[in-house]
Image 1: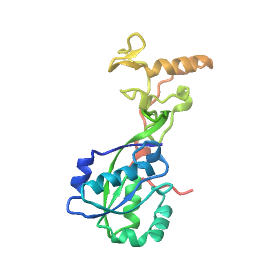
Image 2 (image 1 turned 90 degrees about the vertical axis):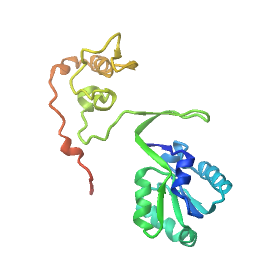
Image 3 (image 1 turned 30 degrees about the vertical axis):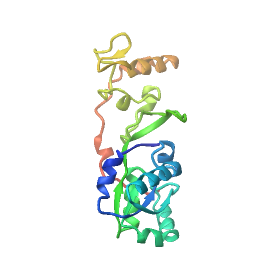
Image 4 (image 1 turned 90 degrees about the horizontal axis):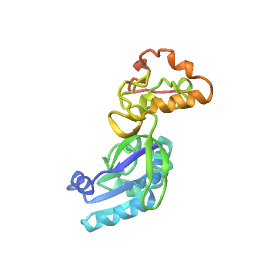
Amino acid sequence: MIITRQKPFQEILKNVEGKKKIFLIGCALCATTCKTGGIDQLESFKCALVEEGKDVVGLAVPDPTCNLLEIKRLYREKKNEINFSDVIISLSCGGGAQAISEIITDIEIVSGNDTLFQGEITKIAPKESRFDQKCSLCGECILTSTGAVCPVTRCPKGLLNGPCGGVKNGKCETDNELDCVWLKIYDRLKKFDRVNEMKEIKLPKDHSKNKFPQSLIF
């Protein structure tokens, strides 16, 4: 899941300065789960904009916003409202905002969210949710050899061979509240009688497998 955080309202307001008519677009998947772009957030955002003298001419929550086909459908269904607007505020991830801009080319797009990382849902609750980054989308997965625990992301140093000499009482030297992920990898491999595999030196990652931008056709 793509984790997002809504930008400060005053920052967004500044980015639509001089714009009167606004169309809001959220996302039914990731942004809804992160509470940054679901229907409830769009309704609240609409009220805040109206209080600032803005005219919200419409809103939509595609499923998902990063799907170009969904944006095409949205534009067909709400073309009149969208074309009537001066600006579109995207309360989705960066991929969603770019999908909107590819289909709706004649109206300025303002991003209302910061895209943080691809994350795992740890806790969902009305007052507080938690998302943890455990994958960096590096393009060369080594999880099989590390007990399905990713050191590239979960080790602050990104070590492919560990643990380092800085681990103390099971904690990382960069953060004394953070468990050393290489000890977790050790425990996982020990459970399956694979500890000896830790002696095999892993070569540096091939970063060309994570070059930008990428396209993939199945």
